[in-house]
Length: 314
Length: 257
Image (cartoon, rainbow over all chains, first blue to last red):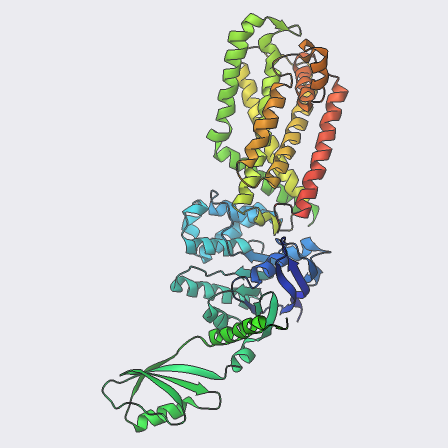
């Protein structure tokens, strides 16, 4: 399968000397749902800025479907749709005009643009607002408007920089469904997000960037498999004896809640068996924290620890 | 992009720009009409009647072309300066920067929008002037060429101003401290032949003198400068400013980090 995006040796030094990217390499396959994660200031938005030509790179190479942004910038741009982190549409224009004008910049005829605008406004539940000015929308509506705008020229690659920031959970879930649907149609999606649950649920491949360096680049399953220990929280029936779990590390939180650490080599069934033998019923269970979040913290944490070493290698 | 797609992109920017100043017509079209009407009443009717003739014409007829040109200059400049800076400030200029729009299309689109407003305001002022005096036309082609080239020149100037501007204050500095003095000293209200030799020489380096006089020639058939010099100055300014604007946008000055 063709590469939708190839980045090699990408560096960015801002005025003042801050090195945002220290030579990153990244490849995203066509049709992928790819997560680019990292803490604030890690270089995610700079990377997206370079890909979309909003940031001038210092060194390196970026290709979109084989088109080098130095040699064939306009061809490369035509494949990309961008949903930026900040609201960047004209606050005084109507939604319909914002979308139709955006399509026009990509050479889409106005009649076709009107049809597409209607389609995406309806799909994203904004049709009733089509004649309202952008500033009249709620935060969630503004996010959806930017998704609609990015789709107006039917891009092959959709880049979303924190698309669900500040969006309530119900709306976030409907946006996830919409993005899954787009991905199933063959659109390559690159996503940055602070909601790691979102990345775990949606993305097949993942890169973690920290201080301008890619510290992890793999598929989601392989990454999650690295997790040695998962902590589950069990809600137990009240009134029974205090639970005892041989061979497991556990903590009794209160009369009816216990946290159990389960290593990769252990089976959760053994926990249930032991509790059943003690006549303790498990009412419900859940992960203490998101699995990807635990990995993310450990990867970023070890990177920070290395940086703090006197001779820390970078 | 293909030339057909470039034309669609150009039309989209033009459409956006014209819609912008028409949407806020009370701010963009009405004020120049009121200002110029006051000029006609005060300088033309009240003071002009005591001045008598200038260049062989009554004073009102003499200042009409200059006042039309003054409104074309200020409106074509301020339209692009405020619109492009506003797009920078709201960051919706990124809509164009991420799209495969060639830089010349962005420049042409904004300049075209500025020209549309400048020329529309010029037409409104011309209609108002008919309430005060009769307008004669000596050479319509000189009028059309001068107004088109002048509005393009100042629209380009407004674009460059907006590219460099870091705040809304920055887009009012040039009009206040450079454009207005040059316009008032550009022969709108007087013939530069009335000035002492030294100040006549100084006036020769004011580009607005050439624009106002070429425009006046189109109406009245009189000019303090030669038409060849006037169109050479206009052509030189347009080429220079276009090259500067293209260079700035290509390098991403004030637009890309």
